[in-house]
Image (tube, rainbow, N blue to C red; front, side):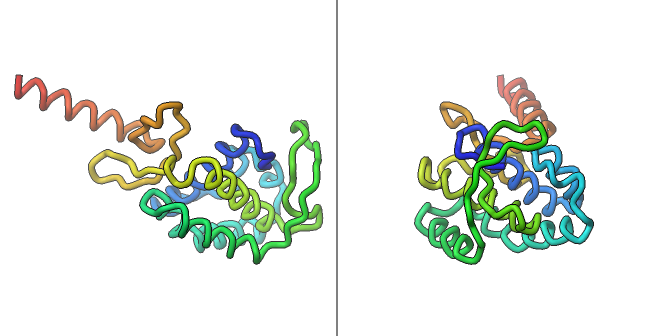
Length: 180
C-alpha cells in the first residue's frame, strides 16, 4: 500500500487514525475501513486475519493517539522497536488495478503484518519529513479524536466528524451575536 509518495503516506496515516478513532468510539468495522482506505486484500482476507488486524491496531492505538502530544524522538524510538519486530522485505508490485507501489512485507506475509508494516513505514516517513507536527487533537468540546493535518499551512483543527466543526462554529457564531 504505502509507496513512499506523499499521497500514499497521507492515505495510510489517515487509515490508521480512522482506525484509532473507531476503536475509541466502539464502532469499528475493520474490513470496511481497510477497504475504504485502499487495502485491497481486506475484501477477501479471512475473518481471522481481520481480527488480528483489529487486535494489533488496538495494541498500537495508544501510541498512535499520543502522537499529537509527543515529540518526534520518543515516537522514533517506538517506531524503530516496532519495525524491528516485523519481517520487512520491500518489493515493487502492481496488482488489482493499483499503480506500481512498494509492499514492505513478502508476498507470503499475513495480512495483519502487511497492514502494520504499511502503517509503521508511513509513520516512519512522516517522522522523517515532519516529526509529529501534523498530528493533532480535535478542537471541538467533548471530542479528543486524533487527526492528521495534511493542509499546506497546517491549519486543521477538527477531526473527520463534520459535526465537530459545525457545532464549534455555530457556538462561536452564537457567542459573537450575544456579545456584539
